[in-house]
Amino acid sequence: MKYVMYSLGLCLLFSCHNQAQINPKQQAVINAEPVEVPLENGKARAYFASGCFWCVEAIYESVKGVEEAISGYSGGFTENPTYKLSNTGTTGHAEAVEVIYDPKVVSFSTLVDVYFGSQDPTQVNGQGPDRGSQYRSIIFYQNEEQKKIIEKKKAALAQELDAKIAAEVYPFQKFWKAEAYHQDFEKRNPNQSYVRAVSIPRLNRFKKKFPELLKDEAKH
Image (cartoon, rainbow, N blue to C red; front, side):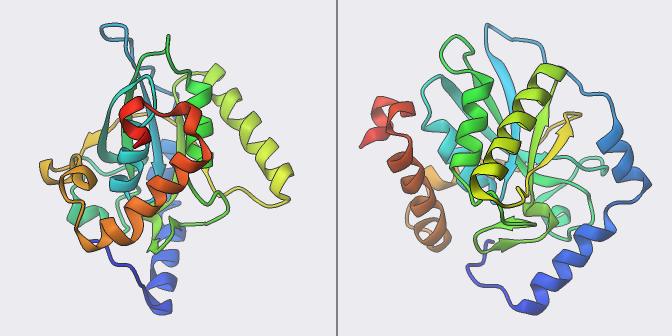
């Protein structure tokens, strides 16, 4: 369950967890060669971590050219992560989404714009009220071209904001699909307290900022 408020003590605890994860296993993930996911039926896949995956899934599913966004875990060193285990902040993983999209309709570059435009890019170790290494921001690249796109946009945003951008840039390794009850959570639970207080407002801010990227049904 997501919580809207966290105590300072919990924030500090999660921050310590994040620092502790830069261990040999996590460093091996960061230094690994990226895995490139082949097209399937003309569709490509991209991977992003940006706080609560309920929020991020809903944002990407509102974008033209995106067929589906799937909630899960990525970026860590633990096999078969679960929601409960991820919430301990000790797996190395972050809540992430797999974005299945048509590259003829929407580019990877635009998906990166969606990423930075739908979050607080300067918040370290979380988004909004969700704090901890499992909520940290990560953009995953599958090849050098994608890495260059990410790094160029990240540098430009840092200059524009005159601030350090929190998103980490990782080589993609593997995506672990989250439990079934997390999938399409915001869509299926519009009256849930966290969804009403955090997810829907975040989605609406994105829609207002990028109306030209929205599917017709997402404009209402």
